[in-house]
Length: 340
Length: 273
Image (cartoon, rainbow over all chains, first blue to last red):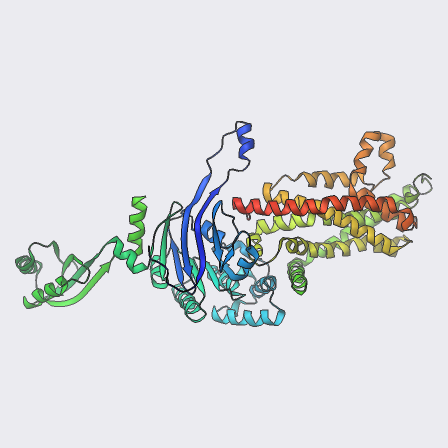
């Protein structure tokens, strides 16, 4: 696992375990009633998140992502272990933690549906202790930042799913907390709005030095945004590193596809086999065009691609495109899921 | 303190706005109070000239009923508003969002009930106002002393309301306090008839139930002040009984509520209902 750098730590998760108890277990045992075993949602999870870092948490449904997020947000008390945010314990010093944390959850029902977007945010701004003038100024900033001006006076019930999602992010940012917990922040956004949201998240980290804890099922987004990513499965952290290192840990190879014309599949196969017969290549004639396709796997950054291109061009091929495909976080996640 | 007031104000504004989004409901409630007062006026006419001299507070039954209903409305708000507010926030899914803000448990308790008390004040006042305005019901005595009784009894009932909310937080449904107080108060606290009649017709054992219900003392005190015109020296007994209830129930209810919130957080069931 990657070691945190020397920048101050924003969130510490220390041997955190969470087992959801069986309600009235003793009574059920006494009465001889059947009961399901307790659910172990987290098992001795430990890591640190540095200030200004964008930290991603990925894993399948039921892996423990939401439980972990809610424990950091003080909404669930852990069975064992501890979490501290900016040095404050989430159980013994929960009010201070809540001053430092903003949560944008994936739960759509967390607003008052008959109030407008503006009235909803004003209510929460007052709970955060903002005065009327400060609250209204902050709302104007957030509505502009998240492109919500046009729907500010609309009832929450009338907003699109994407706008509801953005409003949840706006609420998390109301009191300008140093730590933001974002649960699938682009889940319901259209591609352009999602791109804007990603750029907002990046700029919050870069310009405000906000620490961002992000859970998502959108793996390319996690790769694009996160400085480090933890993979969680069945309540345990399976891997934690930068996206690049996680991919490299999975496989140090990439798949290559070269498309060319002016050389048939048979001719291409012959020239390649003559020079590199020991490698495994697939040569195919294009079904919809006169293109030929050569596919092979190579070690990252070796010279095989350069050599193959040279051989093909010397044989008269006109190269139309070269595509490379490296392991993604999805491959990494799949491999850990398969292993568990 | 400013922060505390600001947060209470936030809840009041929120609830007022939610209420305004259902305008018709308000007018129907006012209309139903006027209907009830009118109905009670006609029923009271059946008893004209039949008042038992033992029941001094019931010489004018309409005045006794209106005081009873106005005060019961207030008491029930004190008792049920927090549990209702928490249940509503659970059903709406907003409880987690509210508890995510740096707001303390006592503030949540006071703020969640603030609007309900304002509304109850208005509706309770309407019972008395309609009686005075349309049916010539007169009240006398020390209104401040009556108010003191009202506040004290409401705070006592709010403590039971906090216990009830704790049940809502943990068990989600099936609150024993609601059953006990909701049905018990109307029957045993003297809202519609003198509590002495329970002793006469059901026996001393059943009559004891009225003595363990705080609304009995609150209502007795308020009627003695407003209808019989008694002063503080004469209403000390119900006053001190209410103080004892308060001394026991306030710390107990706050402790239980804190435990209930912690339990719901351990179980991760804050938004479940």
